[in-house]
Length: 202
Image 1: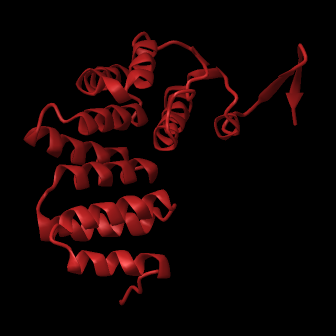
Image 2: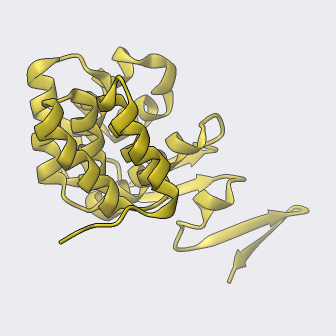
C-alpha cells in the first residue's frame, strides 16, 4: 500500500531527505503532525523512524504520548520503561510513566513518577506536582482553581488529559474554576458566575 503525503507535509518530508540531522527532522514532523490532530499519521512517522535511527528517547516518549491519546496505557508504559532503563532521570519519560499509570488506575504509583518528573524539571511541572500531591491520598473530590492559568497550549492539552484520566479512571469528582473555555468544555456540568449570580449552563 502506498501512502501519499498530505500537501502540508510534503515540504517537511523533502526536508528530511535534505537534512544533516534526519532524526530531528522526523521528530519535528511527527510532533507537527500530532499537533495538527493527525494522531494516526504521527504514530506511523514515529514507528518508521525507530528502525532507521535507533531507539531515540524523544521519539519513544512521543510515541508513548500518542499511545496514551489512543487509550493504550500498557504500551505507553513499556515505551517509557525502555527510556527510563537507558536514562533513569529523563523528565519526559518520568512524567509519561506517571500519566500512563494514572490512565491504568494506579494512582499511588502515578504520583511517585509525577513527583519525580516535577523534581527533575520544576520549571514546567508545578501544576502536575500539585496534582500529584492532591492524588496521593486518593480523594473523592479534587478542587482546582484556574489550573491552566500559567500554561502554554501544549501543556494545557496535557492538563486536560490528566483531569479526564483523574475522573474517568480513578472515579474522582473534579470541581474546577476557570476562565478557559477549552477546559470548561470538558465538564459534564457547567455553572456560570455573572454579576454575583450562579446559573447552570445548558
